Image (cartoon, rainbow, N blue to C red; front, side, top):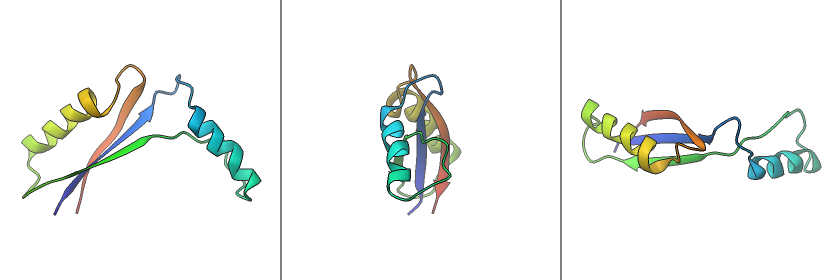
Length: 82
């Protein structure tokens, strides 16, 4: 069954307290070399049948209008995975 995956991230100018908390915890847990962390969202939309251009367009529309808040977030990817 194919899946459409949507990745949403906070806009660069928006503060990301969850990302900052994870970034601060990494070195304390022994993970070094990371300059910063931004936390986003991933949505997986399972598809019955084939992914058509029309269905992919609907997923892009849903991503920009419902799955993300366009004031503070960017949809960075809409992709099909098997």
